[in-house]
Length: 158
Image (cartoon, rainbow, N blue to C red; front, side):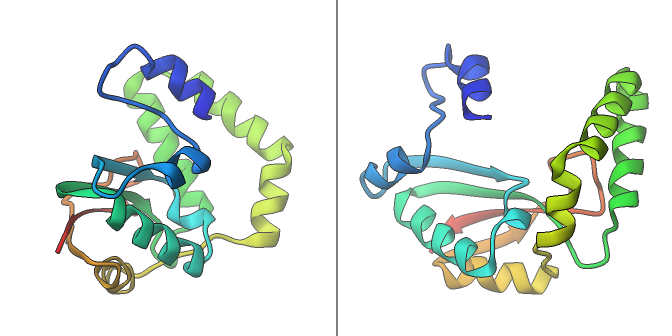
């Protein structure tokens, strides 16, 4: 994924795609924006706490953290599929979306997700977690992704 993002955004002077090693080596206060889209559900609660504290250290005083596509309890995979298909239909890539769904069903992802589950958060729960890391948190009126049942937040350093 990082290679794909580097290829797509590498020509932009103000965008840099980095991995965990580069992130750990960055000086405090050196970032103005961190976007974590569709990440929280794949982390344990402790892993997210650690990342939030790390991101707080890395953000400049006027920086912003966008934590997007947080999965609330009760959002089913069927709801995710339907949201994707509606989005694909309205944006002209329905066949590609179907193909992607077939690949997902046939891949190990479905089995791994069933074994590990995904981490879900209520709005209050995730807000308290973000705030505990040193942020002021505000829910965005929309989700960054196509699934409106998921939620997104902007957080600013306290």
